[in-house]
Image 1 (cartoon, protein in one colour):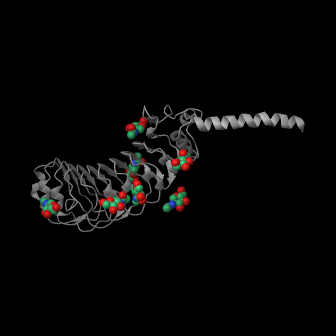
Image 2 (cartoon, rainbow, N blue to C red):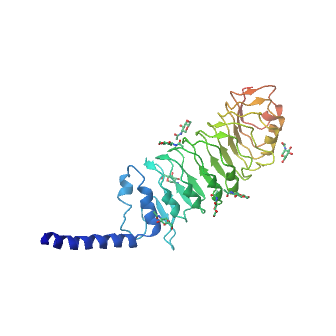
Image 3 (tube, rainbow, N blue to C red):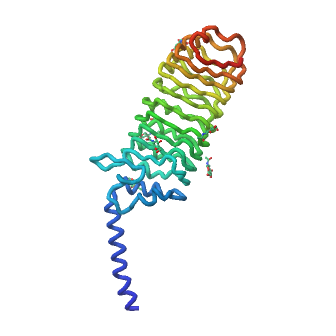
Length: 293
Ligand SMILES: *[C@@H]1O[C@H](CO)[C@@H](O)[C@H](O)[C@H]1NC(C)=O
Ligand SMILES: *[C@@H]1O[C@H](CO)[C@@H](O)[C@H](O)[C@H]1NC(C)=O
Ligand SMILES: *[C@@H]1O[C@H](CO)[C@@H](O)[C@H](O)[C@H]1NC(C)=O
Ligand SMILES: *[C@@H]1O[C@H](CO)[C@@H](O)[C@H](O)[C@H]1NC(C)=O
Ligand SMILES: *[C@@H]1O[C@H](CO)[C@@H](O)[C@H](O)[C@H]1NC(C)=O
Ligand SMILES: *[C@@H]1O[C@H](CO)[C@@H](O)[C@H](O)[C@H]1NC(C)=O
Ligand SMILES: *[C@@H]1O[C@H](CO)[C@@H](O)[C@H](O)[C@H]1NC(C)=O
């Protein structure tokens, strides 16, 4: 009994020391990353061996980049690690993050609401995962966001109209999900690339009217259930170079204003219910056109 107590006391002290030491050593972003990792069901060996809890910062960890002066994490790139598990809300504690690339993994579950704390995020890629649930309306709080890639998941619900508050957004890829409802009319007018192909969207195509689209280069709305046909206001999207609208329930005629799109090089409209003549204005600029009316 006595020998046990004598043995245990130093062990406890040692444990306490190690515990305190590691907690006080690793900075808060490092702790947040370890908590983020705790939601994975498998940790890839390259990460397991390099995310060392006894480091004072996570700045040398696999996939991590820090601000040199503050040692705060500014970039986390865990693309192509085949990580299975959930997205822990703790990553939102890394409030200086500018780039977050978690594409090509096996993340399941929902996008945590806490992500709206990442006010500085400019590049956000969750594409090619197994995420479900909807896009949190709080996405509108990420006002620095330029690139948002959520394609190839099983996300559902509507595209929140608050996404219009992301006024810097240039790329918005939501293709190959289960989104329903309408394309919000609030989309910012500086968009360069917009892809919503392969969803369950309905309603009319909003581009070119009050919402503007003068910078839009690439638009893919294929495989949805739109109504109302191609709006003549599409003629306002004068930068458009690729317009792809395969099998998305388009009716009516192709508006002649398409001829105003002098940069158009790819126009794909097969498998719709379009009727009437192909406007002669189209041929004058397009290198490749493939309308099935
Ligand atoms: C995240 O930040 C909150 C508030 O500062 C703190 O209470 C919490 O412990 C942090 N969590 C992690 C995992 O860092
Ligand atoms: C993340 O890493 C992958 C592969 O190493 C690379 O292709 C991708 O461009 C990186 N993402 C960012 C945002 O730098
Ligand atoms: C998301 O998928 C998980 C299984 O991975 C399931 O338990 C959950 O109900 C799903 N949630 C939604 C909103 O579809
Ligand atoms: C956006 O952030 C502010 C504080 O910065 C918060 O009060 C508000 O609830 C957030 N909005 C959403 C939709 O999350
Ligand atoms: C978006 O901006 C409007 C004002 O323009 C504001 O009322 C709304 O709360 C904002 N929403 C989010 C999610 O930031
Ligand atoms: C994304 O989804 C589309 C449509 O389901 C599929 O054709 C494509 O191969 C997927 N891409 C990847 C990288 O899985
Ligand atoms: C461009 O949009 C305005 C509304 O902002 C509309 O009045 C005009 O007809 C549109 N132009 C074309 C060519 O559709």
